[in-house]
Image (cartoon, rainbow, N blue to C red; front, side, top):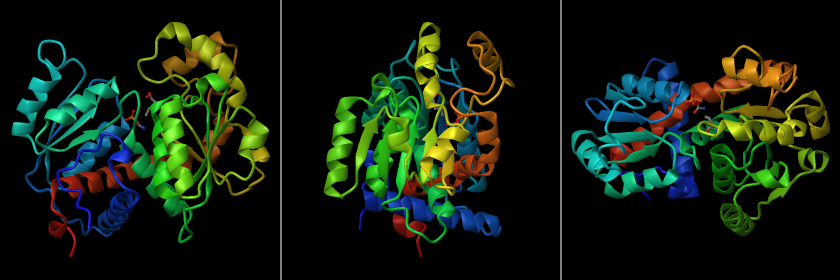
Length: 340
Ligand code: CP
Ligand code: NVA
């Protein structure tokens, strides 16, 4: 039996498909226990530090609520509030923090940073988002898809990722598809396809498991018979402003809207979005971008489609708590401490 004790989670490929299944099953068990008010505080007195070099709503709150539910103690270090990387190296910082805390969550820019942290940390490091990967989001999305399918199997379903497929969500979804045996089609203009090395390695691993991972710029071809359609913002955190307008213009035809849903030819198709979503003018960024580009109805997803599927999308957000809790428990404790 593989044990997840003291393991890092920098990306989903840090784990095998069996280990991912274990985390997802534990997430579902923990969700049930919480809903029945029978939570068991496995993490009582554990100390967790959350380092955020970028903004967050869901990830920070999910880590905090998961820790509170489990009677663990949390320190939040927000952007610019420590010496990290400016006056003190990543290595020195993580060596200190890992002698004080039992686990460390890191959200930051470059993925290389989390690799340095995980190299020198004496305790588990959890990736709360880097420019390349967002594993705790996809753990929650796997749980959500399984719930949506009820008792039916996730394996061999088709997921479409449409939009900016160079980003952290698309990369992590590629890994999630391989690990859960999902067929995946990326629909995007060629210049926004995933980086070749990762794509190729996922395609090869997928082939061994008889699943297909492909990219196309043809919406009508790629979308056919999708069970799930996943999209994310077209402008990720930290992208330089000068690139926004051209990028949005290229991605406009790849919007999730009513027409796209019709083309899927599946009236039960489900829409996923990791959030935040740019679906209306009720944000500063939304107002500026929609006005500048003369658009009326959302960027990556239209208002109507977003609201029609908001129950599913918000379920993904709520499931962050259960998936993160499962990840913390399974990496901070030996399996016999939480399995009976
Ligand atoms: N989906 C997600 O990670 O949301 P936050 O940026 O709010 O944490
Ligand atoms: N791709 C987005 C994900 C936000 C959760 C970003 O990096 O900003």
